[in-house]
Length: 384
Image 1 (cartoon, rainbow, N blue to C red):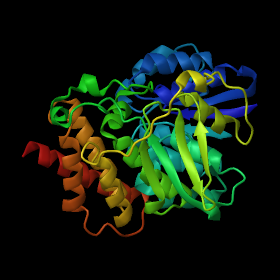
Image 2 (image 1 turned 90 degrees about the vertical axis):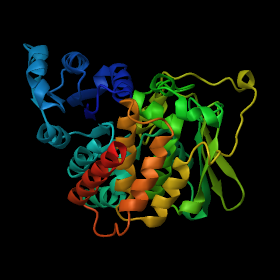
Image 3 (image 1 turned 180 degrees about the vertical axis):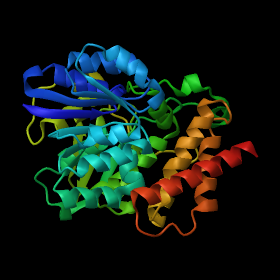
């Protein structure tokens, strides 16, 4: 029986992971589940699956969690130290699905015990790719990608000579405003931006999809995880969201990963790797789909993509600056302080105004410093 921990169990990725675990209850023992404010969901899942510990990231909610777990035998804990402890409890497979840069420290802690880390937290590689990969290598740990695009690339490379890879193509749905006139983008609402045409995801990543900041993060993530040059990574808008990525080789051939837009495919692949196992995802009827469309993204509609190229060219801690600026700008959009298009403007200003010399060793502490500095800078720009 494999011991499983899920960091970020109450989010969409965590819940999809739990769905797969419930379908094979004799195969898994749940060690730890962590979450944020959804105490009721965290407690229900921890009790049902008999987790050893349930952790909320918010220390102020510890008493609520204890009350919800009363009599279950599940230990309650809260706060950053408790998250790190959960990540270091002996486990065979750990899902890293905490949203944002907050997932970096627990992910690093998990790698430190030499386990398999299923990585859905793209910010970890964006802000500290070299550190994540070096930590995994030093402790004999393995990182398996869970982003649908990176899982698709990973699968397309099975059995292939990496030296023969010429390019990878990451697809994007185009988000909620793919066909909205450019002049209207400054006036779209948070509610409109929170509705994805194809995927069922949380609010923040859905808005990031509309702005294509999620794809910008994924370009950087692909560079780090697969050791690719920036000019080898392409993005195409693919409205059907059935082709998740393609890998092009030096003989002109391309391998495409095609499947329904369901995150349980990528999660299940990582959960069962190196084997495949039957999954409860829809089987595509290509004849019914009929046509698969692809187009180059409009730079004016999606300026985040060019900012990602800027980050890759700059290197160093520019990924930490980019991610912190993106996260804080998104906070301000959701709060109604700025409009939709101002997010990319703020991120560009942060990169240009504080992203001078970002060299130096990337550590958890250095990422934290740049993250804090950048968030303060964004707040000042919004307040001005």
